[in-house]
Image (cartoon, rainbow, N blue to C red; front, side, top):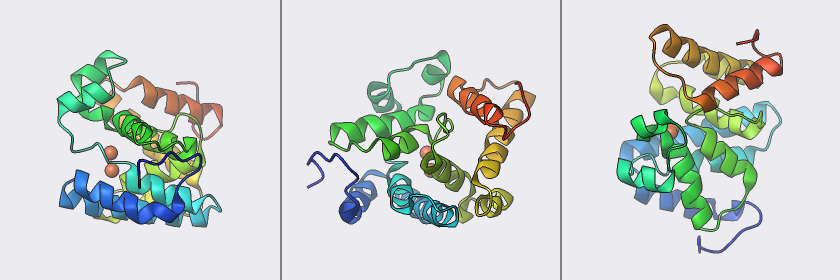
Length: 197
Ligand SMILES: [Fe+2]
Ligand SMILES: [Fe+2]
């Protein structure tokens, strides 16, 4: 069962995870989750990355997305004021907490799940697959350019996605989450964005 502790991703149990997620999110959300997982796997394959982990992280990424704010705040206590003001932004970190409590331990998948809301901070390519897939899956009807770029230049697609978000928020005077700024600066440090911030 899912409660078993795993040192590595239980790739043979993907169907069990899909069933668990289906119970925890709205129907429309689950359709989004499957599209994200499918696209994350396609991006991983195109970039010769870990396709199994990319798919599973896609399946798990929104597992906490439909929990009430009070539950998100309990699972992911605010670290900065923007967290308390916008609990929905905590659903990545809350998802990680849930998965760890259920005994899921693969650090690559957990990092991708945690960072999908605020942006991959580590440069982890599986996290990049999931982040890019989440913002550009076909059901959103936007960001086709990011989706297409990801097939040939994942880092470039991530840079486009993160910089678009940061610039959009800054232009409107909306605070940017510190973790998103970390992701932005990480891309600058790796030469994927002009810098410094
Ligand atoms: Fe999400
Ligand atoms: Fe999502």
